[in-house]
Length: 239
Image (tube, rainbow, N blue to C red; front, side, top):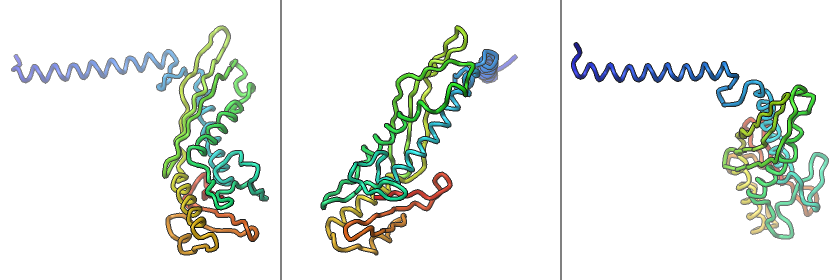
């Protein structure tokens, strides 16, 4: 016979074993039914993976363009046109016109919404009929990273069966755009305070390398560089 304490331990162990066995059975049945761990049917998992990879690549593209064009995907018409990009002004006529972080987030979101329908062609998955519905994107610029989430529901048909794929696509791009934007804002404010003087000591301070390139007597391009690896290269924010 067992004492009361031994009985209690036996019951607890039995419950744990039953729970583990139950979970194993559920997972086994899920695999037999063709359901992936994320809840996406295995048959259409390649479509989701292709979309996820595309989101990650296009997010990097967007952030690169943002850096080269002064915070814009589509710079204002009166921006500075150079051989490698069109750079938006951050300071003009004595006014700070650097785009706010919210504006830059909107630029990233609009870019992703516009390019996502081209993530794959019909020829990539000829056995399926794929319809993409309304796309929504959200970008959040933080000090050291940019969080991105997209929703692009898909109706995926094969024969008479139609599967709805509504899982979101998320990615984190590790680039200190928030800090670099703050740095750019401080440089502009300092130039407004003293427009005839470039403080080299101030430009050399901080964690980022800052260069200035005179274009003519009135225009100077500033380039803030983060030396850490971003897509195998350093990251530049120019204005």
